Image (cartoon, rainbow, N blue to C red; front, top):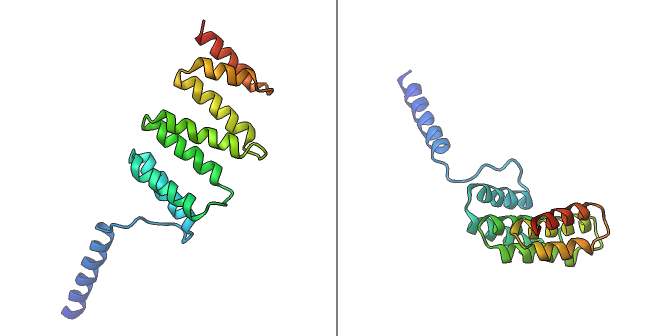
Length: 150
């Protein structure tokens, strides 16, 4: 009986140590793509901009032809924006506009760029860009730019 109690205690201690002091993240799936994005998104949420960017770049390096590449560019732009590197954020938004103009990301990427310029306070650039776009949502951004410029 004592032997079983000692083994039970030992197993409990080992299990507790592994759960309490585990230094690896828990992954719901064994999909490398999803795991890289899960960790990168976690870093971005926690404000660890450097590691988030590094993992997003790693994703782009490993999967350059993946269908989610434009989304990764949006995520990189968002991290750069939150870390106050606005020129880099704008360049990644522009990259999606330039590279994916004939895709399902076309309207969204142009909207994100116009709104980014507005949020950045670059009302002149946002106005010029919005006026040139034919879709109705850009008229709203144009109106906001005109209001901001008086």
